[in-house]
Image (cartoon, rainbow, N blue to C red):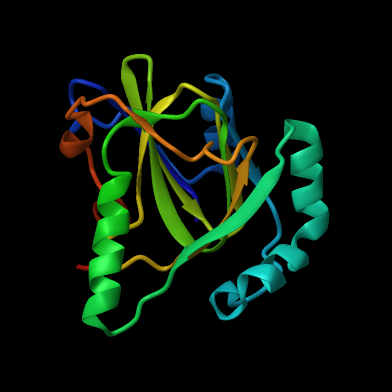
Length: 192
């Protein structure tokens, strides 16, 4: 279930709002130009599907987003647990890459077909932690400061939309703010 938690940027322990109410989440995010939509989950276990099959499964909806938002490139980003040291190293490296505050030169649009991830958005003087679950399509406008956490044991498949090939490249702010706010596992109670 999608979760939104809002905190002041200078008081990460002070929760201003915590809700699973889809309508409230959509309204709170829309006030800042962030769009959250829900798509039906078409595969009970998208982790078992290869990338092309996953894209084909959602082709009509993907084509709608591409047409509406002028997206020209689509791919799948995924990590699924494997009991190997190589996987743990790859997962840790991937996780650290986007745990620092950054922004992009184009909208960041992601559809979670499987699993979950945490987009933490730094909007004005507040921090909006958005736990996206399977079925969530999140669109973060270009220039919005944010960071992404996939958790200690990543397990997700997300369709990514781009306008340009380098659209995913982050412009890191260098601000240490992300270190002060709750991570995915803390917000969801995973790993307890």
